[in-house]
Length: 202
Image (cartoon, rainbow, N blue to C red):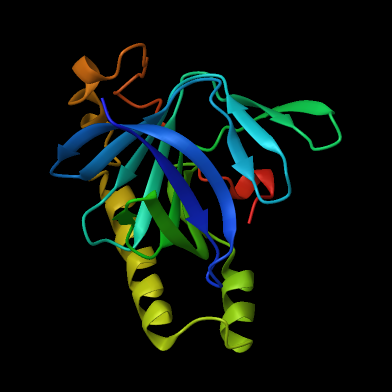
C-alpha cells in the first residue's frame, strides 16, 4: 500500500497542517486514503494531533472540497509545543472543507483550504465560517474564480448531504473495508468527518 505526505494549505500557499496517509484506492466517489490511529497530524503552530482511530480522507475527482471521515471513537489528543497535552472530542456527524481540487506531485497530495466548511448537524447541513469567508473576500484575499468555485462547491455539498448522496450516505467506506486493515467503521450512520477547523487550526 502506497504511503505519501499530505498537506492542507492556506490560500496564500503557507502550510496549515501536514500528515502521512496510506492510499486505499479509487471509486466513483474519488480517491481514498487513511491516516492510521496515533499517526501525528502536525499543525503550523507546532502542535501534533493524534486521533484515537484510523481516519479516512476522500479526495473527489475535480470537485472543490475534501472530506475527512473518522470514528467510532470521536476523541483526539493534542500535544502542544510546550509539552502540554489535552484531549477533546466532537459530536459533529459530517465535516467537509471547501477547497481547491487536490493536487498530486512528487511531494504527495495537497489542497488549498478556502475557509468555508459544511457540517451535518441536527439533521441539517450547516455552512460554517461564513463571516471569515466574507472578510477574506472583502480584503481581496481570494481570486474571482476561487470565490465562484467555492460558493458553488458549498451549495453542491449542502445538496449532497441533504439528499444523503454518496459519499455522505456512509456507503463508500464499506467498499474499502477489505483494504483498510484495522479500520473499524459503522457504515450505516456513525460516520464522522472532520478537517481541523474545530481544533482552531487554520
